[in-house]
Length: 430
Image 1: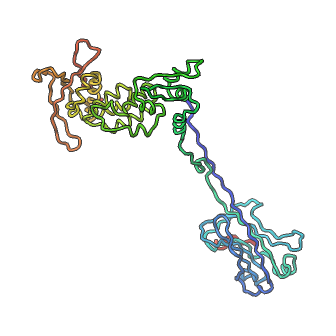
Image 2: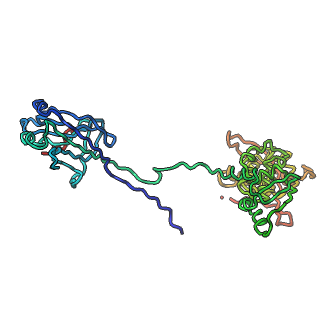
Image 3: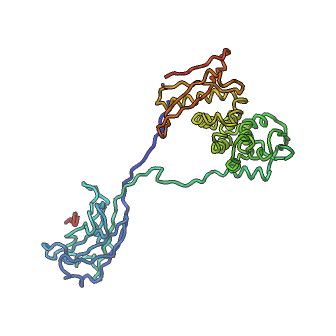
């Protein structure tokens, strides 16, 4: 037993990183702004959220009495439980590269990334740098401070093939073959159909039809060849060659007693002759739309003749469901005379439909006699009255159905009676 197909998916959790550089000029003028008051950078976007750097010249914590400057990163847009990593760097402006850096990117976090619960939530340091030391350090130059900030927003996504797709248009090979036939480029065979000549390509035909494959590929040493077709009209033959969906779909309607005269019917014959199953189904689909009480017998005979099993099945079911009306149609007389074997199939289908209507168990016998047109109706011993409920309205109706169960394997002509029963400040670090 083959192994069942295996599908895969991958959950990827990573950070979307972004950085912002904030320069504070006139530091000495910013002092005295007040404890808990800040200077804010412009907002910047990382991971779909807006952020800002808050610098507190007199500190954020009243208890420190302006002994420290404070630096925080704030969520400046709406967001709920935004998880992120942060890095704050105070730049050494002496060129020695001794920056003051606080980072979560290069160390393990016991509780994972920090969570900012709503707009205005902040992460940072109340005691970022002692103010007296800052003012005598290389971090302050020309009354200017430079702060770099990096934010890494944590995101998770499912990586699987269905998330990425490229549209592939429907195949146009059919139109290419049609153009090849019209242009006759590279053709190597000629069909004479009632005096009309068709140039074609034997390899294409052999690839499409097992009949052509057997006829063309088994023959060697022929550069060109003429084939006469006497049992098909030129238009029908041409449509069979290109297997054109538009031709079959517009092949005509009003299928009645002359069902075999429609283009769809003729194409069905060509499809059967050259073993073209897709063309056959296309024709069956067209003919199926024209099934009626008056036409079903003729279409059933047509389907049987050209091995159109799908169409035949639809016809049998329709005829069985409308048997009383069908047996009074002109097409039914044709069926009796020319296709007697279909009568037995129709009876079996009718019996199956009757069994379904009775809820799974046959409660009525189907008896009678298919009239051959020559017997006296008063002498038909197989006549029996049947009554069954109307499926839609529940009303009962009576009908007389005459059928003769023909058993082709029973020379005695014996009747078969089948009556079997079935955090605002969540991470302030010092």
